[in-house]
Length: 322
Length: 275
Image: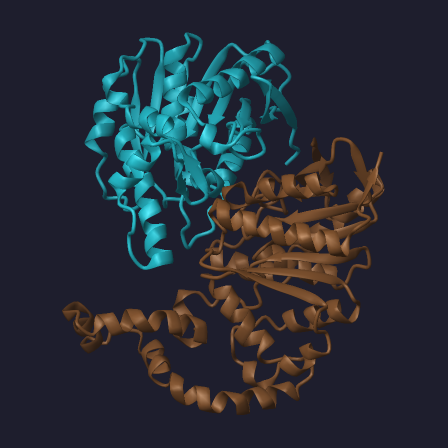
């Protein structure tokens, strides 16, 4: 693998640091940009991006990993002091400009003209928001794609998903025999909103089909069922624009990650009918038991398998001999 | 700010060591600091603080060399190949590189946080050209640190399985039998576990010419300085400084976005100025 450290300027004149990795003996006009997740830098948690990059380069495509403004080694200062606030600005598209500037650099300096945007969590969402607007991007490789804003623990009860409730239910049942839990309940320290939601779950199941029916009539704008929720209003329009433009998407979720439930409940279920017409246009895979950052070799291996298969099917000519 | 930073890839045992040098505006800098980073995910969470600290040191006329240990960041190698010897080789390579490429440098200091501070200290003991150490919350007792590391494996088991299926002792047995143990996606081998566990900085003797600034991170300003740190500072005869700095534990995931550690930085810069 050929590795080149890179310094390039974004549109505001700030220097951003990156690593450009290419196959040693072949050339390709396709570059995968692995976009930094959250506030972590271009290597990703437990160097997930370095390891994924090696797999991608072995497959024959180029990879570019870089640090956004104010993160990693790059120049700039992020003014927000609360992590959740930084995350939410990212989910609102803070780093779209940096991503476009990185593609401009790759196009002008490396002659690249076809891009796949990829990443974990906030990196994946930055990829989606950029990909739907930029013609040079032909695909999205998303790990733990996030469709909601960070409501955080402060609003846990308000935004909790059905999947999270199911996983919490057993814990609450066990607590019935725990004296301290009863003390918490009687001193109003428990999260009553979560408890009520668990108790009312069977009732909601009966009415959910009605709700879903109403939502399906809605356009890509936020349907009534999601108004006041923590859903990112930019998510659905961007996702459907990708589908409309026949751009390829591979979505990989971790089985033990709330983002899977958020995606299923606050996107797939809501837009069921609309998504039907695009059946087969995007792939969704779930890695059982995996956590948000895919911190195990087995889970990483599953990611590589899905990615390899997706690239082979969708980008059969990405690699050309030198 | 007009930065003069240089990306360099050094070679150690045929493997690449990713390095960034920060050069001050003055033409003949006389002092250099090598930044030794903490380990595994602590390195990532604290990375931005390292960057802003390096830039602040540089503004004071100091050359700074930052690097990724092999098995970390953009350097070659995997975490499960880690050994103390490899770590020391990596730091030494950066020190030697800075010395040879910036001949005006006459004084070399090492800076580190947590286990990075520990490795910085061991490096200083392994050669005779290190003049200063700035240590933020150094790990003095390697055994205790490694037990903490294993605890995070247990926490992961709880999160995924709802219970601890493999105890701490069983994890150690697994390592003994040659299997690396997963700590948040970083795999640790038994030799490394043993090497780090056997470190006790209080057991060592420190050269007379080595001066040291130890800054303990306290989450409550009223918290007293740790007795172990006081004992450690007493090992240095060259006017050691021990103080505390009110900061959050920014090497972990916390609610704040921590891109600079102002109190630690102020303590370090005022110590440097006093030299």
